[in-house]
Amino acid sequence: MKEPPDIQKRKRKHLEVCLSEPVEYTRTTTGFERYRLRYRALPELSLEEVDLTTPFLGKTLRAPFLIGAMTGGEAQGARINRALAQAAEALGVGMMLGSQRVMLERPQARASFQVRAFAPTALLVGNLGLAQLNRGYGKAELEEAVALVGADALALHANPLQEALQLGGDTDFRGLVAKLQRLLPQLPFPVLLKEVGHGIGREVAGMLAGLPLAALDVAGAGGTSWARVEELVHHGRIVHPELVELGLPTAEALVECRETLPHLPLIASGGIRTGIDAAKALALGAQAVAVARPLLAPALEGPEAVVAWIQAFLHELRVALYTIGARTPAEALGRIERVK
Image (cartoon, rainbow, N blue to C red; front, side, top):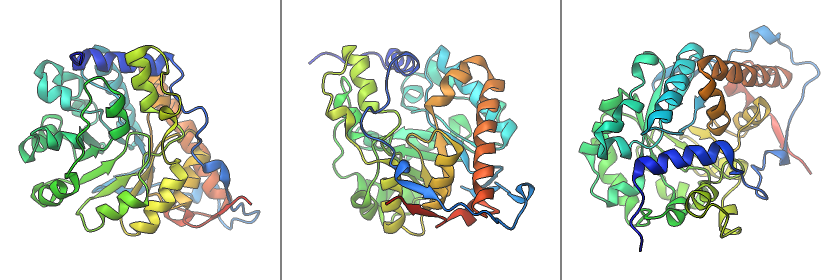
């Protein structure tokens, strides 16, 4: 077996592939096209009354929007993260960092993740791989990841398919629920669990019932396939066309997790590309949405380009809520129907 590539080089290759190659699912969709919002010709409110303000993870967001986890660990990642952080601060939305394992194992990579100075009041969520709990990570490493970046919360990502297709990937996912059960009560900050774009369904949601998680990011299929990214990084082409299409569509994952864990805050991510997608996600039970890859290219232009992209997205969301008679994101719940 070949030695895994240097983690910083892999991060750089991930970025290159996501910016230049076809990394989205080709057959699997988010499933949102199977739903339509319940349009109201008499919404009984003015557009100006629609208030996107959303309490989430102990902060008050000006909109139910998080910049999704993307990158870090090398020079271009630092530039991207700083632009994203500045945009999050300007708009009052949240930001999730890319996986911080590289900064814990390569101290020289830390600066690319340390964006708190650019977003002093924004909701900032750290990020580590859940499988690292089977590689010696514990309370100390999780606390260090949060402390080093001044994060408000920590996301643990579950990504068995991505790891299975990554050279030298961490593929031991045994006993992780039991480890979470022991570890979570010891941590002094909110912890959420997320996928990376292949979805969390009712089976996993049921396994998580009773755990003191602060939120769950369903991160469904239909947007970027990280299995596809890994094949393009490792082989330069898609070797397993069926494997890279595996996953639960985002809308399906959201509905199943809401039914299984009705009281746990949910983030909808995975192919969320428009304000209409966001409105549908809120109507199906999400408290917030997260968007990642569409913001990569704007981030390379600078924070102004990221702000412009998000503002256009949020305008569409605001109009969508207005046309279904929802004054707030919470009022959107249930104002949707399945297309027959």
